[in-house]
Image (cartoon, rainbow, N blue to C red; front, side, top):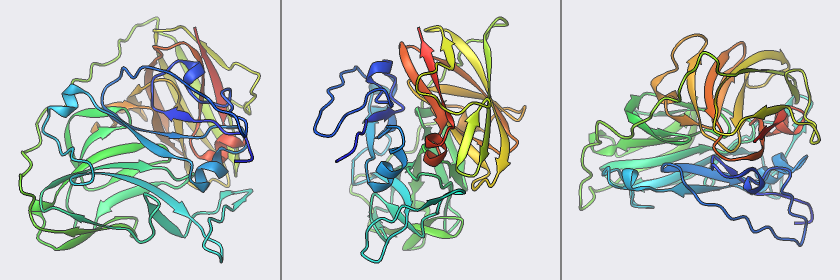
Length: 364
């Protein structure tokens, strides 16, 4: 490319200088050789650029992909894990096209113009042949700004088994799964319980993916285990540090705690290895498209402990790196950084991130 870029490992717990944020710029014609050791539970993560002023356009143009982490716990649970047979990635993105069939990125003072077309894994009008058995889907909302509420056309359950940072404690049958930009969910659909020959995954009535149910697989999948992973709550302490992050936007621009992003300013300094409580409030704003902000933190996986004063829903009680905060909502997370360095926290509506709604935390 003729412009700078970075490669940010979204969801990976790595030192700050390996994180691929805006400080690890790769100039045109140059290279970057990060090295790190993955030491976190099995999860579906992703990567995308994170350079100042070009993140939104570069992601829109195609710079994004998935990272799978495997571990013995996940591998031995008997979950569908045959890639391309009963274990599929679903990278969902909305796009507009020009008269030549090329991506047409259009942003206004309101934000990104929503895409008229939804792509799955870069494919127009996608369909998939699936066995009449249990099938696993790793869903990533890789859109710049659109939210999705995934449902099956026949009303069958989506059984969620994992969130951003890995397996949940148990499978959760859901009729719909909401994902804001940056969020992931792993789900299992039991096609053996569906009588139709074809169903559709959709969001708000918009078709996402046609699913054609074929003959049973030669080796039937076992029942899902009742217990998936052990999720130990982060410790609480009366003297624990609490930080507040107030999100506010006006159209495409936004602030966190009344401040617009400054590359040369450290907004928060956090002790390495200490657990804190962060309170994220969405103060709303003018000309908001989605009504909310997906709040993402680099370099760690956190736990959602409260949403509007109540326990979070079961699907939010695993490990997360991105949490949606609707207009007027308040979400409490418990967070701990186990790697040192400089990290970003920001709204994962990429146009908001690029127009002020981002801050920097130094872990030492």
